[in-house]
Amino acid sequence: MEIVARATVVFFFLLLLTRGLKRRALADLSPFEMILLVVLGDIVQPGVTQEDSSLTGAVLAACTFGFWVTVTTWATWRSRRLRRVVDGVPIVLVEDGRPIEAALRLEQMPVEELFEAARQQGIDDLSAIRLAVLEPSGRISIIRRS
Image 1 (cartoon, helix red, strand yellow):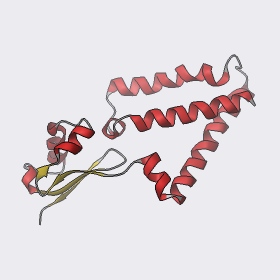
Image 2 (spheres, one colour):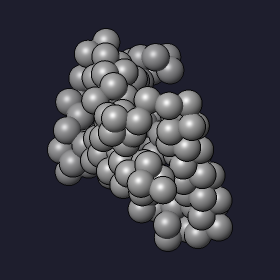
Image 3 (tube, helix red, strand yellow):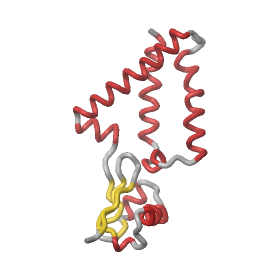
Image 4 (cartoon, rainbow, N blue to C red):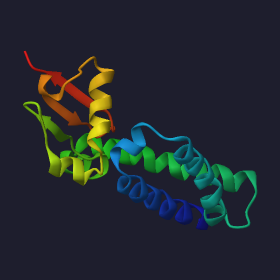
């Protein structure tokens, strides 16, 4: 039972940790960030299972994580308020061709990254953008002017 409690605590800690990361970091991981996430699994594992290296302990910890992922997914599907807390909300980055500095500052996103997203969608000038939105997934959606 102790493994279930430890896995539950670690699950919610990791949920808070990933919510604390900027969205764009989760969308396009740099090699360093990918290494960090892989190593993070090895770092938290002893805290979940302690000295228990049994198959039962591993299955119990994995099932606990699976249970909380399922519960969180179901709860965010049912509750708009919880979805906003867990998944986040879209943030408008460009409106009518003008970057919104406060939003860029909030997400610590340099304007060059915004230009890169525009170029990836075949847009060479921000004035051609009616709306650019940083989605909760970390992707930037761009709607061109008509």
